[in-house]
Length: 477
Ligand code: 4AD
Ligand code: MG
Image (cartoon, rainbow, N blue to C red; front, side, top):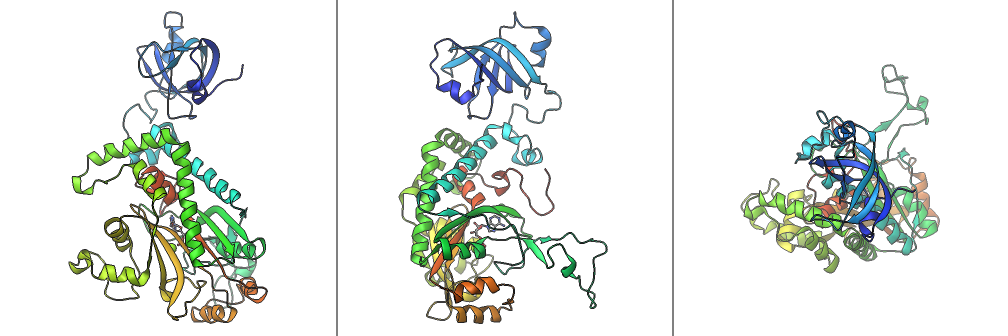
């Protein structure tokens, strides 16, 4: 007989029928009731053991964490809390679990403790719910692009270019670290390295995605990206996943429309398909918020927040307007910001972004037309000569979720910009070619996948929405 999943069994009618199931014991109570979980749903199925007919030695081995194979009958539940349960006919212990040392005891654990046991934390309700949502969001993303005529493109992980020009890259090399070949001036001779030049893990697939947009029209990448920024915050990872659509003949307004429609669509998907996990995470958040002072508690529950984003327009505000709002804001005047906004041109810190979305507008905000000198080289220069067609999408509780722009399609303007920033034309010869042969207006954006998962799950630390977080001083598992 094929074994069933808990999710399948809970949907079945309770008429007596023979079934088989495999899973892990969450708890075993009164030598009789097993709460069994197999990851297919948040819920456990209750398996009732007849202890008089079961070997004493077997009963002792039914411990929290053990893997078991149960054969029995699915029947209407005798007790409260579930419709069906399993009357166990036979139980086979597939893998014992030592109750003395098993880290995931049936009690509340701190997220810090669970991070240290990340290989087992998906055996808890919170982390299994988060990871099912993560999976579902990934699917929704591919579904959205597929249904809207985009091609999925795999951009390289190893690259010679620094797309963002921020110099925060991890080097890829197989040179002998202790004894590298040297140039005459004492610098490392990367010509002898594996690729014959200096290479890194990519910070973004955008530049390569642009080449496909300029031939296939509408493309997107969804892959891992790497940044060696030494920021130990709850919103930064050294390895994170990014979704980057890139579209030919689309301007910045179209880019904003696409980003907004896309985000609403994938969030709607989880509202429709992951209700049980969302409701669980919503309750978790409510419990957590009860421990906070009233003023810090959120006005909306998790599902209300997601619905709010799905149902309301994002507010579109220019950088210049945002600076005016910030300059005149209470925390700026009272010098409560760490960085006081004094004049146009200032880079926005996350405290400013959060003020705008959480206190001022109280909804997602698309900021656009930033000063050219605080943004990357590839963004299209506006007619004013000082701003670029950039956009950032800021979310309540998260801050920056999306960064994107219309790209500079004019060869001469792009070259001048690269020269000013000391970016080697020879390294990006292929990128410049796009502007020589059939150049056109085009745009795209990058959405940090983990930040989206944080928003959809209400988790407060980015380390808790990726299976194995990579952060400064930490690459365990
Ligand atoms: O704003 P960023 O740096 O934009 C780019 O990389 C562009 N090339 C994207 C494009 O236009 N195709 O990064 C995009 C998003 C950010 O808004 C943020 O959500 C996320 O990626 N992000 C990070 N997420 C987690 N950890 C980090 N260290 C991140 N850095 C950026
Ligand atoms: Mg950005």
